[in-house]
Image (cartoon, rainbow, N blue to C red; front, top):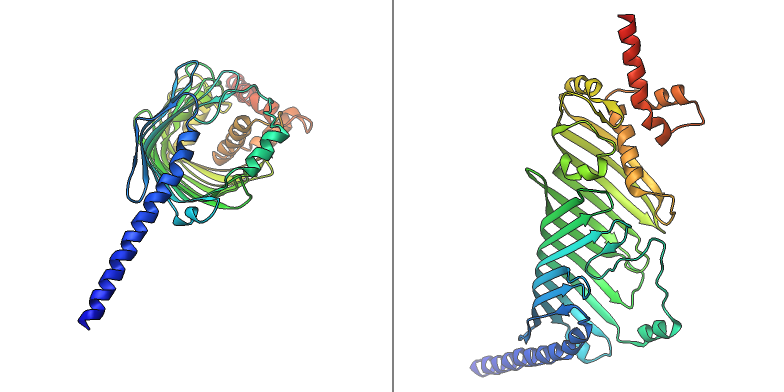
Length: 375
């Protein structure tokens, strides 16, 4: 019995030792691919080959022209699969990205600039030559079982909305994505994101869960936002809301589906502790003096279900405008205003939607003038 225990112990040591040796060489195998991926403007402090993973530390990226820093990562850990030694493909069990900080911005012209993307004119398309496409297909195939981000930060500045630009700040982001292939193949890669969104005076939470097809960019996700301050999005609605908003936070629950560049997103918006300053101005075409007593009847809480649908590939379709219009309709209906019948009665069947909505303020003003004359 003692002899068998000694034999089993020796076999265990050999097995464990062999595993670490193979893992060490698997790490050495993927190291040149990481170094090759380092493009212009991308730098790192050091790389270390650990027993089970490759550690890349002090990663930074900046625009070679503007010197704008796009991201900074404390450490990336790459855990290779032993099967990479037996095949021509590169298999990675996990990539863990620790404490990354990303910065994106949208220019006044509408181009997105940041990590992995550069500003392009609207409608501009990057053509890939047949030679480059063939080269990608013949290159090494990569399969990643899981990508994780821990304690991430994202700062997004939107200059297109005017001055001052919108500032969206996400903190404590934990992200996970599974089953990623390159060259891209069509499959449902599960994703999940949890984090916090900074507001002017408080912090809300955000949770996204679902899947994405990285080849077709089709997605199906559930989106939940809790206790997000309304004023966080003020740059987006300031053309529609000229009255002062004293307070208010919102909860959003939505299921977002994008298929063949068509978005379908039913949602429910719950605005709590919503207070408007007395005085002039409007909120979604409703004069503040009309809105305040309506909100008081609702105890300053509005539940507004809405639905966003459209073709993202259509240049005439604006997601921002469609979203605001849908919320505007639902907001007024939730307050008990027969907004659709009012708009149709005032403007007729041929003029609905945005044109009618923009003139609802005139409708309220006319009603107020009639009441004054009758008094």
